[in-house]
Amino acid sequence: MNDRLCFEVHDNKGYFVFPDTWFGPLLGEFEEVLDAYDADEISETSYINKLRRLAQREPDFIDIHAHLAYAFLEQNAPRKALNAALKGLAAGNRIIPESFCGEIIWMNPENRPYLRALYAAILANVHLQRHQDAVMLTDKILAYNPEDNQGARWLLGSELLRTGDHERAFSVLKEHADEFSPYWYELGLLHFLNGEHV
Image (cartoon, rainbow, N blue to C red; front, side, top):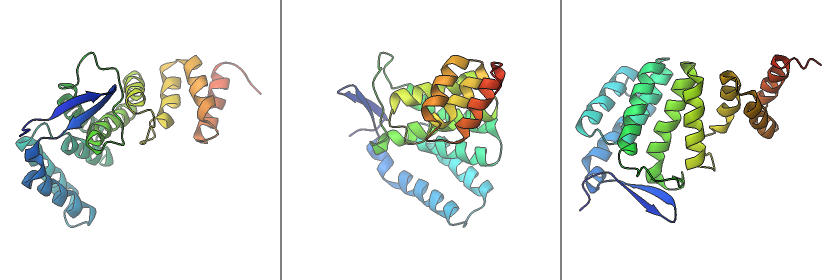
């Protein structure tokens, strides 16, 4: 019986494996809290408190931390969001081998909590104007999950621009501007910053 969060690698792809104990009452309680909040049956404060209690019971349950991070982002509390996201990431990072350089894809449902926590950390860093950290984490999530199911690439160009990496920002903005119209504005801003007036 598997009683701890694990990470396995097959064909250079990483997979989180949840402990068997998570598929009992704990997962049921977690889903009940999410459902109650989504149905407006509990307040945001109650939602956060219930998630915190679950996190105390099972600190390695990454998805609890990810959902806490998103709740704090909705409250415009990015520092709290970042702390929650980092707790979730720490649980995952502890078991990912240092030598691992493969993918952790969204298509595997058990990878999604880690990727959600990683994306929440990116958003919190954007809100905190920690642009270098946001870029570093965005590069990490895109390396792990090149399909980019969460849309991190829509943040990368703007964050690169704000770090002063104009060359890489130009490349990213130009590559994705046809798919994401706000990048046209960022491209115009970049041309202006470079003294290229029309």
